[in-house]
Image (cartoon, rainbow, N blue to C red; front, top):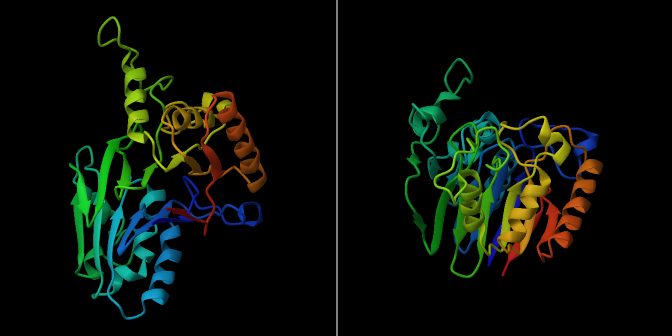
Length: 295
């Protein structure tokens, strides 16, 4: 069984308060457990709570963790300095992420803990932290982790995890190429439109996933004013999920302006879109503390 738990579901900036109590205000962090393996996707503020829970659960037992960073914007790395298992020498932590445009992933990841920003250097944490740039398929036990470059201002990776029976795709901060101002609209040849082709490749990456954790930060109306910011409108995320025949879609990376009530309306809209497209994908809004079991 693969067990997926959401520890942070918000995008851009943490939003604590009464209006976000149901779905949560912590930024991106998702835990995936499969057998003895523990994978974590992104280190937003939600990873702090996950770390506290792990210290209590494992007590003095050593941990082996694999942390996959989608990209190094603040809301996806800002919780790592507060992830307490990373300060314990007995724990082994592998951190994976994409190379930067002109810097290594290691240097960018360390940068947020420069003394100008934070009092503790990454080197002052556990010596058992290894940082890796993702360039090929990764094998962890019987798990296979594949990656896909997404359409976002920073180099951003989506991840697909499979144990041979169940598959989870984590793909946040992705804008559809079709309609994006980043899409040139140029033709590769007379038959192929580049933006459409790239979106189709993304759909193939999602194909038949048991759970697609997909960013749907904007309504269609909001997206019209925010094209090029690197995020998706609800309609596109749902349409891609249906086209890929995904079994479940967890709406993720909730906009800071969206209250619990607003998100519930978006879920209803998403379910209506699934019906309109003739799909069977089960849609729900990801919620802090929520666990999804994939048998």
